[in-house]
Length: 517
Image (cartoon, rainbow, N blue to C red; front, side):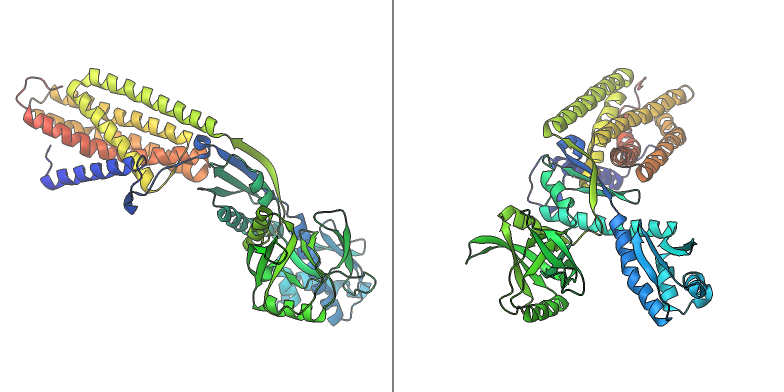
């Protein structure tokens, strides 16, 4: 029957007031932490930068295979097998052996019976393929191995990209995977992406190596250019220390030289290595290499055993800050290439907000006028319910601090239409019931009850579509499906609790009238 207990009336009133207050918190600046929540505007509404990054896994694959050469050499050494022409080309490790050892080589890569062989375990773990082409063995990653390596690189790169962006303090960044070798970065409110592009474009692979003479270095050497000039230095390939040993890095002002430097702190292992290298290398130049370029190559004057030091290189404070940020966040597992970028200006974002709000306002006014003319006092009840429904929807989005996009506004507009549709179904059903039932209370109760199935069917099917869009879609599609899905729940609550309560109050006081609807 059309009956609401006092407890239920109080509950509905409190729920409605709560969400109305939460909605208004978007326009106020309260000190209360409960109300210190706001809806975030998406990239298309407040402007910002969109970057699509692609991971170049070629260096990773080659580095993994290069590291594997030591394992293969050790295996050959243990088996007293002489290996010839061991080289890495085109992501394949190739070598030759004498004919009598060929089956032994194949077994260690493929024979399940050699399960206890540590070399077999190593090759199996990396999912490597081995083939013999005209007497030459070629070792490369299998298709599954490539997929797993790309997935691992993507996970690591995603975390490091997130660290770098969080360090800058960008508001509500959106960082997502795309496929198995791409990362999407959306930065609302950022209209100058140059610094972000510079930070994300650097691998930040830091190493400390001695400047040496290639003829006297058993590890080999290579020529590297200085970052700020065309000069070159011959640097040993032996890595004394890497960025993995850094605990912290911060920009500092050197009081003695009055220049900006980057001070760093090493972990226990790094401090031990650094102390040993500086004690045995007094008088030598220590090259600090970042992404294949020498930042600086100071001469070691004394042993550095404290586990801390400074990197100098003619930095400005901004460049020192960025370098410290890169070192703190860690090196990317592979280079990132920007394959797509878009910048949405704040003016265009404001235009989108204005256009969306005008569309919502026009649609809302037209719906209100139609319902008011069609159903008179019950149209007024419907319109009051629609307004409260909007407060409920915006309130829920505010509590979860959701990001509102232009498609999200479209979802809100569609919610208004669905709420009206539910009320129209109810009132038309009530008209049908009044043809056979003279008791208004019974007719109105039957109208709400018998229309419930049709309303639930329509809303549940729409909800299923919204759920599929949310999990299968991305970006703007998620924004649309989120507001639509939440709007379905707020619509059902407003129709069967708020609108029904207002209808009960009116019908109970006017049940003696000849005509109500």
